[in-house]
Image 1 (cartoon, one colour):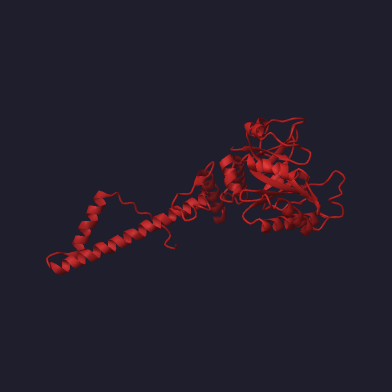
Image 2: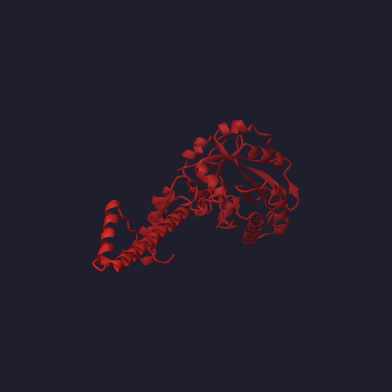
Length: 346
């Protein structure tokens, strides 16, 4: 499984030796920007400046207080990161209970979920095209605090003391409450270290908003297989049409997903804004080019027919249809003709 490495920082860490971090293989780094309605992390500007200058995938997080006004909290974060957030910047809501419980006091699980959903929506609206996700624990996930349709950064420390990236990379991917984290924070010693379940090129494309398809992992494929087996058992060995569609879609995605990204061709109309493509973009472009070839072929055929008709009008001994057939045969001999059958709907 492709992965890449990262760290996160707050006021408790000093200036970093970014050359040393990059030598460790660090690709991304997230820094605490704010907390609650008013607090800004004192070292955020220092950290994020270093992250950007080092050429890493940058990001920031906000420690949430679900028992405070969500609009004020979102505004606090937006003000803190606004001068630094650009394309490829990743935003996180740190949704976790303080040790004294003060930030969760008086709020139900449903209320925390509503708060998290609203905070993410407000930050997404402030930074369109940028990624916004949630950092949250197993207990928060089990309690239903976090929205499901957002990227997940998951903290869990299976080792006591310091842990190396190689240990996390060799470890099974966590699946808290059946969720599939995109990032896993696996230790806080000597720094908060995380891995991302994407290769570096894929992470950069994802952060830039140009990679929309996520690779199916072996675990994902096994889950599909298990679900199909369960359905077969429950249905007496019969799959419904929708079951077949779901399995075919999962299988196709597993086969066709690339480890990395597809570079947009130089003549693509969106190459300046979308230099890296997901498989969907590649297929759409290929489809458009095939349709252009088909349209050109139709135009050429019409021109040949018109030319043959004009010649036959001057020489009555010439059969226009036979002439068209002769020209077409000559073209077929010179070129290997490939006919692609597509849905006629553009």
